[in-house]
Length: 278
Image 1 (cartoon, helix red, strand yellow):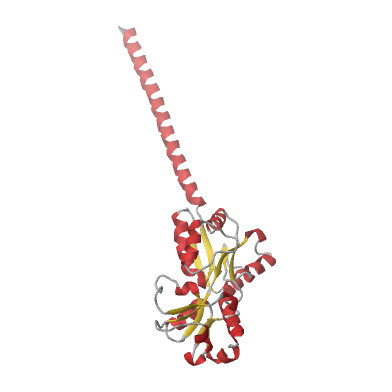
Image 2 (tube, one colour; image 1 turned 45 degrees about the vertical axis):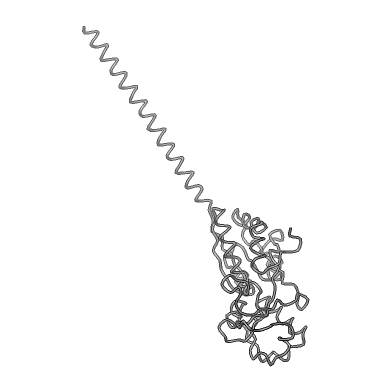
């Protein structure tokens, strides 16, 4: 009986001891699994980046659509910084922490490469802009003849040609048509193309030589009068982008800019595709 009792006691002790050991291993395994899941979750978050993208004023509306499409298909986010190409260039040259620069011209991104701030391999043309003559009035028949007859307007808005490529294109149109000396006292200049457009939209200017994309924006389409300026009246407005800080997010964004999604956004926003684009 005693041996039996001791045998039962020993067996019970062994069962409890082994059971405790099994329970310990199960708890340890569960804890390790939870820790691994947390690490993987944190790791995914750690790799998500926010890109600081400096964008030319003319391209803001299209870029907002691109931003939405990119973020819908990526773990990365975009923070837009809008302004004139000249102002962005000056800020980047002085150390502004931008990751990508979408300019309204080719010259400023090229300078950044020449100055060693960016790499040649990170430079690409993403769009070709178009210039338009625009008025907030709906009843005008705008065109070359309308622009040549300066009795039709008192004030015409353009972007500052020293800062904005669309302003430079506007001065080329005046020169080509022989209007430079005639319109010089009628000009009002915006720091960027957005400000030039605002002069016309607010009624402070009768006409404006602005980006065609502005007249094509969703909230203005069908409003006002517009003339798409023939491309032979000014140099092509080729718009380049350049990566300033290499990262996985920046490379992903650069690849996205060549996608069919962006192609459709460009064409419906008043831009031409870069030369050689499918």
